[in-house]
Image (tube, rainbow, N blue to C red; front, side, top):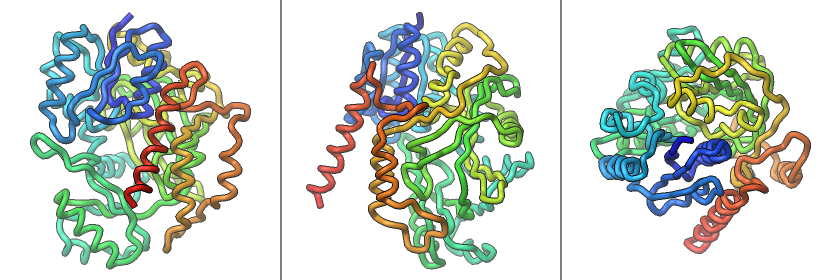
Length: 400
């Protein structure tokens, strides 16, 4: 069995990897940001945990801490879960040669996925429908944009823009008027240097994942977003496995092949009311909803480890269970928080009702429902996440 280090212990993906590989008998260590609640670190499948310097504040300190842990614990396989750890380790991948295998996309593929403007350009070149997007370098650039239909999305080009030994974290917001747009853009320009302005795309969230090998999509999987943490758009708090749609698969394969991904990868779209697909993002690292394919029968972490350490090729395609739901309880609670604030002024789409949503969420179980966080056989991560969520809200209330 392998000795595995999983980073970003606060993330849903880290918990899914810890449980999957731990149940398979591997020795699991979980690393996390210093001082940050890490539910994966209290899992029954975690044998060892440690805290490292926050990578976005101290890249060198973070890399040194991970390197020393790998050397002292004979780690065979290091799996970062987020952009904040993946990018710094990618810069220093040669340092780990002969010590531990880093589970990383190639540098080129990582750049294609982490740069949202390059993702849009890649989609355009491959004939994959993408939202209209403009790269803005200065406030006067706004005067050159064509007539905009509000709201529009204002997002950073990178989820983290690295400046020497630290990072400026990205953000996503909505602008509801020309003045609102100008203020939000000018704020991000001061922080990040450039910013993306993107048309708003409403519709149903659709995800596709696979194990990419030499341009081919092994183990394809598809899901629908049922609820999002933020109803305006964010990660999902409830999602459902569905059969793979041929067009979703075709568009996804083009992007994954074009980006040069090897290993697990995912693509997300919005399906507009008329049925047209529009790209949202591509990703070549573990994603937050990865517990769903595992619960449906596709153990991506296990296949990934076997491929990295043994060169074992995963099957081209195996049946998985459709109609499986995966729910993240603290995500649903945050969803309700947003609903309590009411529909944002100027929001162009239908907005969920708080009371009807509360009634639906009050049903703790139904056939096909699984939980990302709460497991009877491994209860501590879910309880820790719930406790952390409550403590944060109590602290916020006291500060107000």
